[in-house]
Length: 356
Ligand SMILES: [Zn+2]
Image (cartoon, rainbow, N blue to C red; front, side):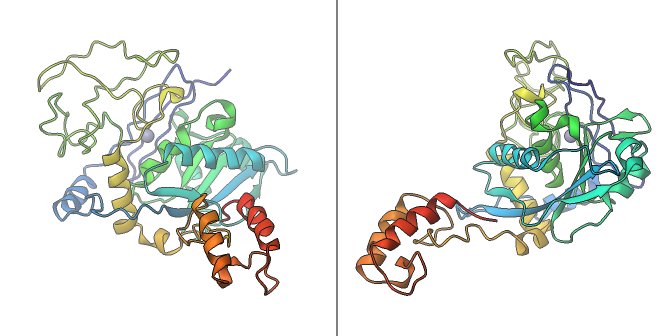
């Protein structure tokens, strides 16, 4: 049985603490709102277009590097195993597909062996201290924790806006995909790129007619006005059963119960909208450029014969062409000559998939 975990924020030096969903049937609160100190910074950036989605998306994903840290007991036990970390990465990438952003794991998982950190990470300062351990620069540092708690209780995760004092993400092990929560990690990653909850109140309530959608709510216009659906969506059918009445606009609420940034049950959340991912991409490019500069090689695989940074059947056609023209890219087994055995090598390379 999954734990019911609260979702909280502390405002301490501009830091926000946010947990996500532990129990699919009980979305806990996460007032991870921009502080009054951050709002003018954000609005200033909006005024000069820093959050505007890039006009020309290349179609090639930027592969953002993540450094995973796992807290284990002093004897090395506890915490997710490598396949569970890979599952978390794959699940996040699935929810972020078609965003232009994918996440990768260029380095080995960093293990921190400490009974104290494993059992007693229970204040905000301890969580922040934990998130500062062995940070690998120019990557998103993510810490998987056994018992993620702060002063007000257990939380599922904590993330950072670009405006946050402490950078890094921590997620409770009990909120990872292998425990049945497919969306919290992706949700925390979204905060890292300055996406807010779909019901975000800091900029004012979004009206149901959407007329103020660019300056209120989550500042994103293709996410409908959301009154905060916590506890009002059944995990079985993901239908909203609330009766909140809008303060402005016309018509009733039609909250985005499938949105990753909503408070819908974690198992209902499988959607990020084009404008959300556009904002995230703009944040990545304009405000976290070090992650772009340090991006994983999209597809360091010589089976990518046409060089589009993806492995597709088109690479087979490209290999044929390269073979016929005796182009060096046809030499898939690296023996310096181009022979039919390179076709077998191409298949082997292709099946190895993208690296990095
Ligand atoms: Zn959140």
